[in-house]
Image (cartoon, rainbow, N blue to C red; front, side, top):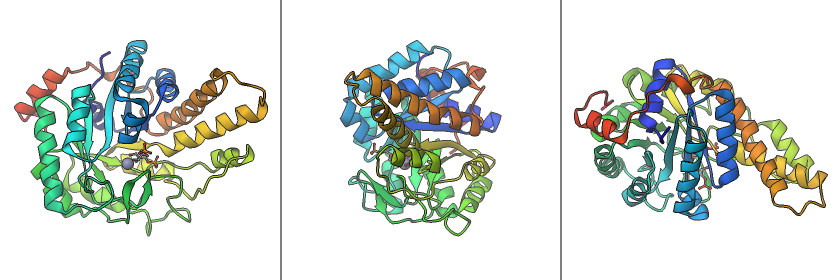
Length: 340
Ligand code: G3H
Ligand code: 13P
Ligand code: ZN
């Protein structure tokens, strides 16, 4: 199956009332681990690359690895998504490369750190929507800022999404999906205690979903930071400054209220670290790169298998008659099915 658009994946998820995990990747082993899990659980999947991932792997390498994934698993619907695009230029370059979905993160300025005001966010996001929809490509916007800071992405301060402003933002930009800030942050240290309603504002999602029932909601910073995986990293000689993550039950509650895309990067990184460290601990004489590579692939797959079942996406790979970018562009032009 060719790469599908994220809009179609999310529309199907809304129809089936499940969530789709969006896993971050940087290399071949992560892509292979995700695809093996998708095949075994028969899940549709979103694979996303940050600017850092594009620069690490190289655009052409990353894109061709994705094409290889789609060719190798023709029955699995996969969307290729730009995570946290910091400017219209980043999003346009992703679309030119062949990404089927982009995030214009106008919650922050181009430096990825300074909060951007509402009007500027609307302006950059609208610009990307116009360019992308003409080409059938999906757009995710963000309103509100996450906490924390990972590799330069994030303001370091949480500014929760205002549901009333969310209504205006979606109406004025025409985004397909809206990333919201509810208290989560990127990375392994999200909360210093098991999150309750005081620090994880799930009711914001419920309010936004009531106001915007046709807009797909996106949860960033949604790794659960499993304590057993963190322990495995430490037991194998690693050091991680880990706190509490987002409980799976909170993600599942979100899914009941319009969350369709769930961003997971950290959990994959932690599992890869645990599996690779255990590999070298158990086989100190291994100097073949395929050994740790297989361990990395198995670590990514281990997390993906769990999340695919927990989010309800397992078993939904065959729901699709994929739409082409041209068909999606025509659909946008006719403004049919647009949440805006
Ligand atoms: O946006 C945050 C993701 O976890 C990507 O992180 O920029 O280190 O690739 P990264
Ligand atoms: P985590 O750091 O919780 O995995 O979040 C990833 C993310 O939101 C990528 O955009
Ligand atoms: Zn994010």
